[in-house]
Length: 250
Image 1 (cartoon, helix red, strand yellow):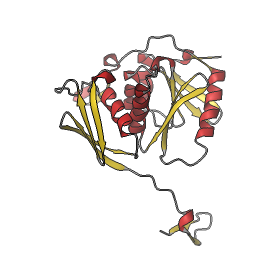
Image 2 (cartoon, one colour):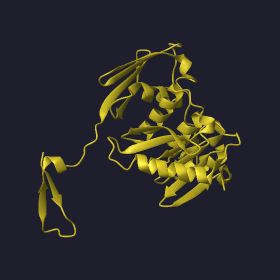
Image 3 (cartoon, one colour):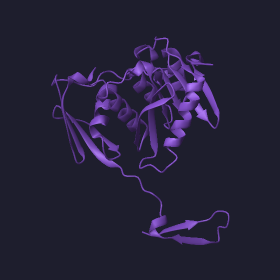
Image 4 (cartoon, one colour):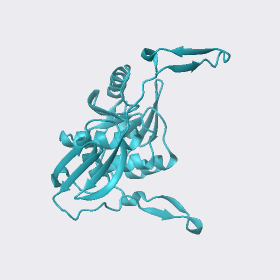
């Protein structure tokens, strides 16, 4: 494939690059998830580690409360089949939507989501070291555009990549659950846009600190503040803390 390049600094010129210089395309695989024989969802995933992804999905969508409830996972092309110890399992009420004026949907009810009450804190020097490690880890091209790193102190515990924000969050959570990692003493640095759904997923496993290299929504900040989660943005050499700044100490 030959890719044509248009230089906006000189729009009149056109340049054709060789295949070796063409843009890297990311793989996305439509994957159907079946739980106890019933279709639960179809998602677009990066290739590999489907078992990790679906483990996180089962937890954050409240099909199960712990991974001991998973009987088996069979990953095939375009399909993941899960059996649970309770064959009648179904997703829990993960989203509680309240109504505003005239019945319009207003927001997710933080009172229905888990609270983080543990006195977790992270020293800013450890955070600085970890951010440097993350930047080093993503300095080379990767196969997927969105990343999520689970860290403790200055160290990276694990890193996962995927094509979407929700997908990479579930993949990171599933990998940590499979590795028996204690979320209450860890934090996440990601490139996802922090939405209320990302916050909800992280609250389900009690992650106390969530940092992004991008941005967040006002609802995400509101839920984080009400439910004990520190949410911050990493921009250049600054960390902008939007909720519970006491969790990052100097």
